[in-house]
Every structure is written in structure tokens, then in C-alpha cells.
Length: 534
Image 1: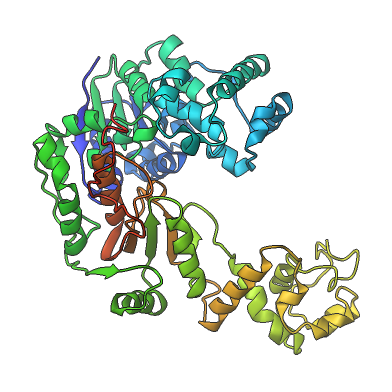
Image 2: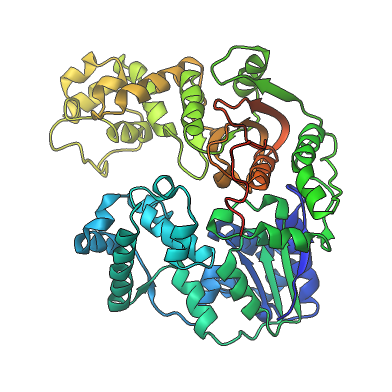
């Protein structure tokens, strides 16, 4: 087994977009592109690397396309699957079949997107136990708060029986999951014929993934792991912080910060200092040039104070980006309530906006449209997405607009064409034309607040919210961190979470005081600090 050369870089030091690209160019002078493998943990990250490398003159000269890198720059799972496993990945349709086979799967119903993101607690249990290199019994015995972590699957017999059904279903239907991709490669695949192996965000690798990487690297000439041990925050899924902290002691260090200004840089180093001291290493991490920033304090998201005034002023009067981040529920709900109350347009990280631009445009444009102002065909099509039968003439609600001329129309033309009812003229508020739903009231109040404050109906949202695990890898001008500690976690785990949270920001940061007894990143007398240690 070849030992990796670990390249360590604090947040925003260009690990992915500068170091890796430069390293790839250097390696191309010695090795064939066919035998250089670069792996990441997400498809998004892999695609970003592919796009950057395809822009290199060497790649343009060869006329290479994205397809060439399908299994050369990809996720660890994809590479493993490509070497042996020929089964199809389990789908949401398979999940529905499992629900029909065993009532246990119905105990927690999830949507297709939730299933894809491992939100179903049974599949999360399997993933976490596999990631930590444990049997399901070992993982069950290791947990102290099983019912809260994996509810409603707080009965081991239930999980055991469901796993038997699940394993049999996969065998009969020739499907696999992400765990199978890794396990099959470890157990059965031939050692791949490659010269160079590079792993991005290596600290996120779990126990089986490390084993798979060890096998891949058996015959390589060069082996690089690029990451930041201080950002190892997926311990619950099997990432081993201790392993990467020890690698960091002798690592090549990236020092030049390109993201965090002086204030956030200093704060992050203060947060992570106990871990550096424990592992007996020191890191040089320079702040981004010409960026200072300010650290503000908020007693809560409902308390009026000068720091709150500054935050709202920046949100509403600058073009900067903002992130509200937190450990978990209920902090996420508090952040969303705050954004609702103040009429701030926002998105959940990795998701569509809470309210789409086209929906906001409908509410903003409709009152003038009713008064006789002509609007574009594009706007009329957007109206149709939300209108109910009390406005649209029966049978016209599914209009494809194929016979429409691309021009502006008045409401009177639509009534004359019998697309809209004459009663439409009485609905001066677009709210009354909408398809009814339980969430309408809250959403309408929010939209009205946005319009009142002059929302930009064309540009992208600048305010985001999401838990700390979700926002890792992201960059924003400003970050607002709720320090409420919502889980009983190891002290070092808390420090790494806090470090990741603040290091998402460039300029200013706001600390929201803990709204509970416990504060993220502080030792708590009644916490068991070996809770997540391996």
C-alpha cells in the first residue's frame, strides 16, 4: 500500500480550483491522462474539476470531451462501480416496491428527492453503520440516542428484518446502493492499472472509502490526498478526524488565504487552536489580501440592536451575499422565520428559492394587468402556472399557447378569447386567482413583504440558509452563525463545526448567541466527549 502525500489547506486557500489544476498540469508532463485518476465526493465537485481541466490548452489541443473523463474525474462511488458492479442503482420506484413488501418501510414516507438524499432513516442507519465500518448490530450498540437519531426505527428487530427484505430485494432485482459500490470493489475488483491517484476533500472519506482508496493506490506512482483535517465534520458517517489530523502533521501546507478576511481568519484560528495544540502542529494561514471585516454579536434573531440594524441594512442595500447557518433544528426554523418576517428573499442551500422569481413576478405584475396594462406572453404563461379554475375558463387551463402570437396582451383580449373569465377583472390581487393550498397564507404574506421592499424579480437571490454540514464548501460575503448546540457531540467535533461555519464568510460575520443551555464549541460538563470517537 502506497502512503498518500497529504496536501493540507485551510478554507479558501485554493485547494480545488488552484492547487489541483496546477498539479494536474504538472502530472500531464510525466503521465498519460488515461492513467491519472482524480476523485471527489460529489458529482458537482467532479463536474467542476472536469470543466476546469477541459479548458487547459493541453486538453483543447487533444480535442478531448467530457465523456473522456467519465471515470477518470468522478466520485469515489462512480469509479468503484465502473470497475466491477454492473447492477443499476436502486431508485425511488424500488423504494415504493419495498414499501409494498414490508410495512416497516412505510413507517417513514419520503419524497423522491428525500430518498435520493438519504433522508429515510432506515437507509441512513445502513449508510452510517457501513461508513463507520460496523455491522448493524455494532452500530446499534454504539448509539446512546438511537430513538432520536433514527426514529421511527428505534427497534433493532425491526431494522434487522427490514435489512433481510432489502438485501433479498436487491439480489432478486439486480439493483445496488452506494454501499454496494464500495464493498464490491473492495471484495472483488482487480487492482486498477493507474499511475496517479488524487483525492479531493479527502477528509470526508469514511472507513470503507479509505479501504477502497488503499486498494486503488496499490501500484500507483504518485498518490495525493488534498483536504483539511479541521473540516472533518462527517464523523457520524465514518470520516476519521484523528487519521487526517495525524496526516496533517507532515503535510504540504497551503498558506495563502483567498476567502476569509482578517477578522474571520483570526476568529477561525482562535476556534480551532485547541485541536492544533492537541495534535502538536501549527498552521500558517494568511488572511485574504485587502479584506478586513467586522465581527458582530446578536443576542437572538428577534432582538433589535445596532448589530441587527447593520445586518438588515447590508442585506437590503448592498449586492453582497449572506449565509445563515446553524447546527440543526430548531435553529433552522428560527433563521427561516427571521427571513420571512423581514421580507428577505432567500434560498435553502442546494435547493430552489423558497418562492420562485416567476411567482413573485405574477403577484407584482397582476394588479397592473387587471387595470388594463398589456403584459408579455412570457408573463401570461407564468400566470397560468398558478391560476385556479375560478379565473381560467374550464378546458383552457392546460393551454400550450401554441397558437398565440409572441406579443403583449391585455386582460380584455384574454377574456374576449375566452381564456379568462370576465370575473377576473374583480380579482385585483393575484392571491385570489391562485390554486388554493394550505401554505398559501404564509407564502402570500412573505411575497407581499418582498414586493413592499422592492424585490429584484430578475436577479438571483443573495441570501441563503442551511445547516453546517450542508454549507461546507460554500463561500459567501457575510455569514451569520447560530451557536445553539443542538446535539451531544464531542468537543473537537463541535470546534470543527464552528470552524467550518464561520469560514464560509469573506468579510463580516455575526454570532447569534445560543438559544439553549449549550453553546457550540464550548465544553459542557454533562456531555460525554467520547460520544463520536472511533
